[in-house]
Length: 68
Image (tube, rainbow, N blue to C red; front, side):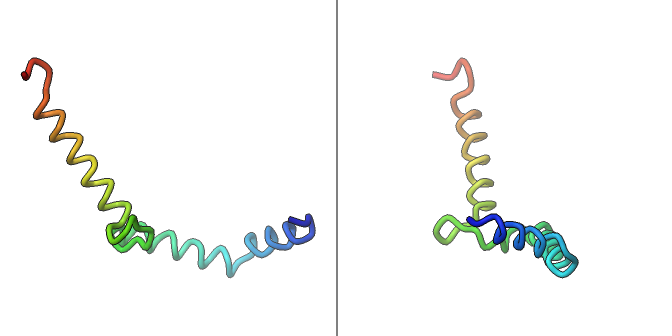
């Protein structure tokens, strides 16, 4: 990317309107974790991550040390 384009983008990202929208979006994502648009198929990453943590705990409990 040309340096002048990059500097122009950096300037746009540093000024008020962009920063205000960025902060509002950050607050919205934190307040509505399940409505996160980043998904793995039809399941959000957050839901997938929670299921994975549940699976890990279930496997650890089921196959605890000393269990045949």
